Length: 312
Image 1 (cartoon, one colour):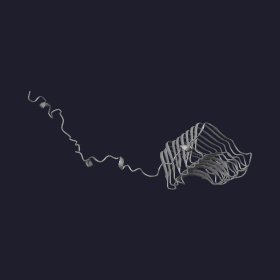
Image 2: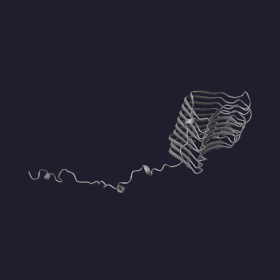
Image 3: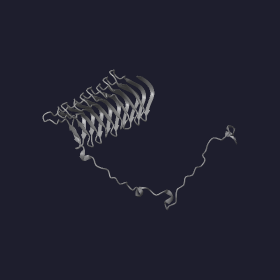
Image 4: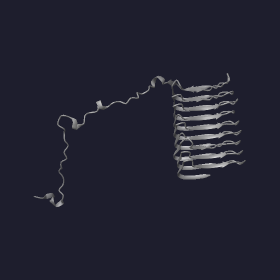
């Protein structure tokens, strides 16, 4: 399915889909447009309900992509034994406000992968980018390239229930994680290893109980590699590549000076400032004589050309 249009809005549980319920693969969806707006449950997906593979979803937007609302999403999921497909996003501005980009599998298939290329990304209000395996297959990978990525109470996650977690690669000039945001490549149970997390940025800021993790249950924890010019964190931020089995921990390598700014952050006073004492009295309230503003006429040319030399 190939669609070219200046703008597309899918609202109020509307959807654009391609799906399969048998042995065949789901079809692909490719959108080339100016802007895409998904709101209030608007969805784009290519899913598999059988043994076939879910199809890929590709969105190229010249202006912006907005995914707003808890059930608004772009996805490629396998609900049975097939593999998840891929989600490919290219746009200058990507906004996820409670929305979701996802690829998952429920059976023994592989979770699909997500790749995003954007100039500016903003994830807020529990928005998520996720590739998951909820069965025995491995989770897929997530790759993001952006000038600025700001995650505020949002999640970038690869997770496997029993198999191996997928890898996460984030590359940005400025990467900001605030308000309990998480970048996680983990395994919930079993002997699968946690995925690897690699971050490359000029500046990484991680605050407000945000976490970067690559944990495993019985398998080996993944590796976390951070390559940045500067890293700013607070004491409640965790870089965790642990395993529940001693000796199977992954490695955390931060190739940058790390600055703890916990002592530099203070709560602003909640009370409002009474500014009455700082405002001057109105002119009419002053005791001295008030000044005045008068508009007078000014010299200019006479209204008629022949009167220019009148009296000569």
